[in-house]
Image (tube, rainbow, N blue to C red):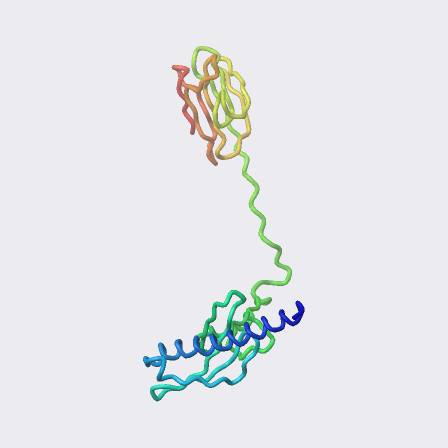
Length: 206
């Protein structure tokens, strides 16, 4: 016997064995579903292929359809059509049944046609008089954090004053010779004067 004949014979034997296992697997599955003994269940093939087939199982007054499949390693399974999950469809498909929510539209009449988008207000400028009321020159820092933050350093002689423009939220610091902060004031809208008081270590802002 040549190799091809051997192969055909082996395939035939495999398919025959597979068909037998399919029926046995369907019978056992139906017996479990029907709560019957396997010998009480009759299996009738409907359409059987090489490694799968459909069957009708009857037993204990019940009947159902099963699909059996065998894998290449000889493991067979049986399932009912009701075991399969229902198909899911992406929303917005062409054949919808009307259950999808309607698209939403913006109302063009909600605002005048010539209304321009609002722009954030520009920061207001606060003009402040800096006054040194103590008896010696003081070192100043304009910024969030002296020595470690960004900003500018300056000084103000004793008993003198100068004008400077700020924005609300800016800070004025008295610093020592090592640029360490001693006292500070935060500029607010409507503020007019920032004064270094007589002790040279505190600030009065108003």
